[in-house]
Image (cartoon, rainbow, N blue to C red; front, side, top):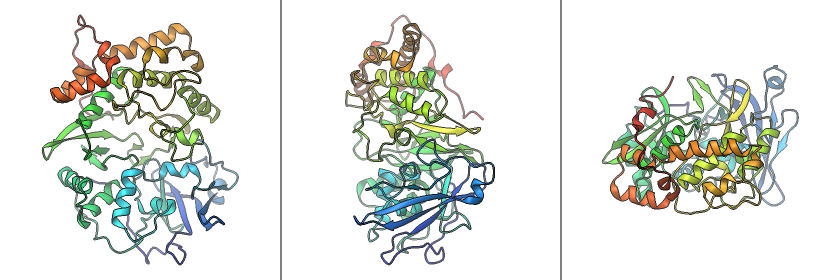
Length: 443
């Protein structure tokens, strides 16, 4: 069920590395048109501070092809080389193609004796990453960098959901074997976020499998499914999703929005558009309104109203894990636009990471957020209408939790964490939420 890519190991791959085994160069390919096309080269050299500095140069033939476009919505201009800024080893946009907490943890466990920096994380994390980019040792094609031969051969048969979940549980419990790590490296080493995940094919569609984490206090998979269904009902573009039970526990399956058959859809995070470092999760001065302004300046389709709607959704659901890496943009038909919503889950903290707008409180309160409408260029009447639509969808939050099989204790916990959604409920309102749910992924 896991999409397979060509695996090439040292020394066969001839990756250019220094005497310490640190990468000196890698080729960058785009698969936005299906087949990999060489678009540039990343090269690295040590700086005076001991941290490598990365430089990206677009391939001259590609630039002159007449179809070239910047690889990201911001931060990587087409006509000149781009260097990383200390302490970062690659130009900031490439962190959108890099693994995050979960993927990095897998790679560190797989290669405990290797000094992994940003270039190695990118090159070793597989070629099924978010977005359209793949990497290789030279211009001959994409390949996966394996910095040592310590790993067992990766399994070649289709991975079953139960096998992936068993492997993730072993990693979370600190008892993972080489076999566990090998299975997860093939399917999840390139995924962002801190929670256990794997990339799978489900019902013939490329999807992400989200699994239980060791410290979960509630069934996060069912909770996220309910939040995504509320988002869709609120008029927000949302991927198809479902909850399955495997090995006695729930797993959330979400269709990938960065895949369209053989086409890989380019992706840029809001962090890149805002020129924020990859470590800026909870520490940022950005707001929803400033993201909409910077996106427009970057040539992205106006997303002010969509971001305002998502702001209100996050307030109703108390999704306060709304940092810049949990907002993104995709390129469709040559035009960058706001991506479908992702990583929407009710949280325990009460303050948003992104303020609604400058000088507006970060409390996750839809009434407070509504006052920021002028910063989005939205008049009061339209803002109130958007608010009421989101409120109507949020009123079904607990019904969606029941629909996805959440138990009474988890529903009670979620209700206490999302008081504005519960307050939106109206006893006289009666409708079938199932009518709002697609039975299968849309073509």
